[in-house]
Structure formats: C-alpha cells, structure tokens
Length: 391
Ligand code: AMP
Ligand code: MG
Image 1 (cartoon, rainbow, N blue to C red):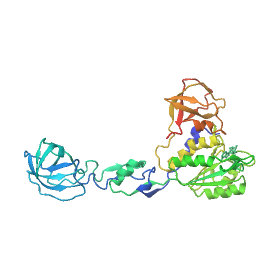
Image 2: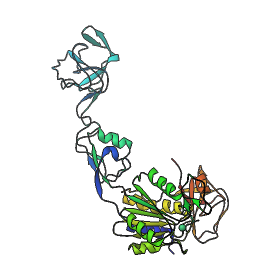
Image 3: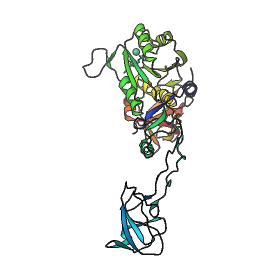
Image 4: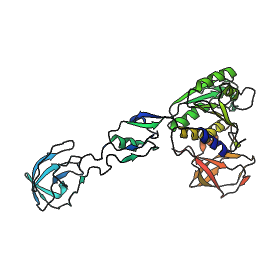
C-alpha cells in the first residue's frame, strides 16, 4: 500500500496537460492561457481627454476663443492657434495641436470665449497613447487563469478569441444495485444515490462543465460496457464497486478494457481503496463508494489531476496550518482526513468521522490531515488542513 504523497506523485507523473484550443473569449472563463498575449494595439490608442473641459496649447494667454467641439467618438481635426481652444469631453480624441485640457470648473465662459482661472501644467488631463500599455508589449503570460477582469481587459484590445488549454471531458459512472434516485419513497434495502450529484457539483463549481453521468448495476458485463463508453472521455470517475466484495466488478471491468493500473489502495482513512489507472487517452479514478471516501479521494487526488490536465499551474494541494482545539487520536497508523471547522486558525474537530457519513463534511469547512505516524495530537498542536466548502 502506498502513502498519500506517493499517490500524489504518481498522479503528477501520469497526468498531462491537454492540447490547446481556440475559444471565444466569452466562453473562456476559468480556462488557462496556452500562450502569452501581446497587445495588438496601444491603450489608449489615441490621445484622450480625461475630463470635460477645453483642449488648448498651453502658453501664457489666459483668454481663449472657443473654435469648436470634440465629443467622445468624434475624430475631427482642428487648427488651433495659441489663443484658441476646443470644447472637449471625457474620452474624446484630443486634437493633435492641443497639448493640455483644462477642466471646465477652472474657466469662466463669456459667449464664445473662456478665461482661464487656474492655469494647469502642460499635458494635464491628456491620456497619452500607450499610457496603459504599448502595442507589442506583453498583456498576460501563458498560464494565466482567465477571470472577469481579464475578459474585460482583453476585449478592450478588440480581442474576441483566445488560445487556451482544453478543459477535460469527464464521465462519471455510479455503480450499485442498492442505489435509488432521490424523489420517490425509499424502497426496502435501497439508499438514495448521492455520490453522482455531489461529485458533479464539485466538478461544475470548479469550472469543469463537461460532465457525462452514467449509472450501472453490479454486473460484470454491464460494467465493462459502461466503462468502455466512459473511456472516450479525458477523465473517468467511477464510484463504488472497487472493493473486494463478490459484487465489486469495477477492477475486473477496467482490466478487461485494458486500463493500466498505476496504484490501488492508499494508506489513508477514509478512501483507502482508491484505484488509479490510465488507458491511451483517459485517466481513471475508481473511487470507493462510501460517500466520505468518494469525496475525499476526489478532493485530494482527482482534482489534482484535473488541474494539471486543464493547465492550472497551481495544482499542488493548498494546505494551510491551523491549531487543534482539542486532543485528537489516530489509532490506525494511516493518514487520516478528518472534518472540522476552522475559525481564525483554530480547528474544532467533529466527533462523527466515518467513510459512510457525510454529516461532518456537510457541517465542516476544513479537511484536516493527521499524519500516519502521529498517534496523539495534543490541544494547541499545529496541523495541516485544506479549506473546503468555502465560496
Ligand atoms: P462500494 O464501494 O460499492 O462497496 O460501496 C460502499 C458503500 O457506499 C456501500 O454502503 C454503498 O451502499 C455506498 N454507496 C456506494 N455508492 C454510493 C452512492 N453513489 N451514493 C451513496 N452511497 C453509495
Ligand atoms: Mg457497491
């Protein structure tokens, strides 16, 4: 059985970034840039007035004749003499011959003339060409995650398409005869199927929108067929059927589909029977069916692989350090992932921790890592945790 860090290393070894693809900028939120972006134009691309006022040639003359008007969107050119000005508004193109804009609050208007009350410095209120960025300069490096600010910024250059790393296509297969869809009274011996919707929500909330959901009963042939279909995706997640019971067919069905095993079983709790493997183009995680095990293996392992595939350079688990409020035991000699609530760095651990239970996951905001070699953790001791269920 391998350790948590060995498992993470194997995932890093086998997960590869997907090919790049051109996407409309509008549909690129959350993707990672596959190439650097250079400014196709300078911003601003022409000299703009930063204020409503008058454009003129700065000199000694304080009485100026207003010879015309430039509003936003106009491109009129003016011959401006030293005793002349042009009425101008924010965002409008400053005529070539003007070098300064005086704000309207600093002039007195008399008919077709203005008198300057407070002479500005030369160049005041003129946004120079390329003040924000010059054409040809780097706007963003490759590997940048596209967010709303970036979508706005790139559009201000007129960009409509970006080259990004593809997002993985995911298939999620849920196995189990006992599973019943929520929405009707529970049949005797059945339980409501909850892993599919939980994992689908976990994926979609992280921007992995391409999720196909398949369900299969505990039958070898049906499991083989469903897996064959799921192997068309970039990543296949399977829930349940990976343990050693007589009706656990997932491992055999994966072998029949020539999926190469990379590891099976990690020295951890919950989530020991995680199976990870690879076929030609697909990474496969067979997650244990117990809900807390499934979610833990998804958050720790499958998500790391998905980040690497989608080009997220920040794929390492982002553990933080907190301080335990009370004594905590680890009787198992395994790495424990236990649920608690973190507030101001203080961690309160919940009493109910079992692979079959989601109660503590549902209440908690911290997944705390207890090292395998630690039998007792004292109050005040520092531990690592992953923030969960936040935003
Ligand atoms: P398995 O990994 O298939 O042996 O399932 C382990 C436990 O998790 C059993 O108690 C199952 O009933 C339960 N389980 C498996 N799949 C699901 C699921 N999709 N939703 C809720 N519980 C499940
Ligand atoms: Mg099962």
